[in-house]
Length: 164
Figure (tube, rainbow, N blue to C red):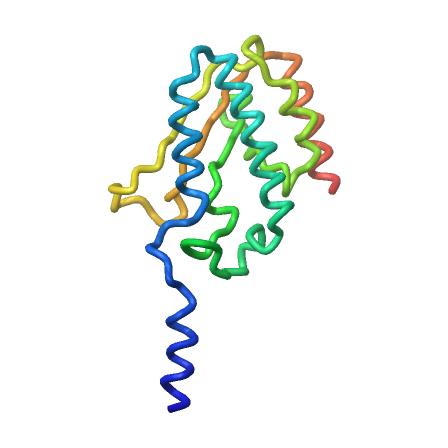
């Protein structure tokens, strides 16, 4: 009897269908992003999404903890469910833009505009891609820049990140 009770508690914790509660929201955002009329609009959307995702995980700290696999809505969610944002500023140099881990990037992202961001690349996660490792099962946005002024600010932010 005790064994059945323990199994019921363990197996009953995940009533979902295997999709994080954030996935539908991210899919909707990606559709809006694709419909953006200009690169400037896309950049504004990216900045707003980075800030919104950071605020979401600040408001829901239990979701931001990668070791905490509680059930929220459909399934256990973590920051792994959010869209990953990155900035490439030299041939082999780039950084992941995560304001929760690196709040010193908050001022930097407000500098993004169509004059200093050359291009944006969307890596969209496809549910049907069975060959992607579990770690890659999320969408991502990569921003590219070669603007000298922005690169100086990036280097300064990276330097500040290494101090903390």
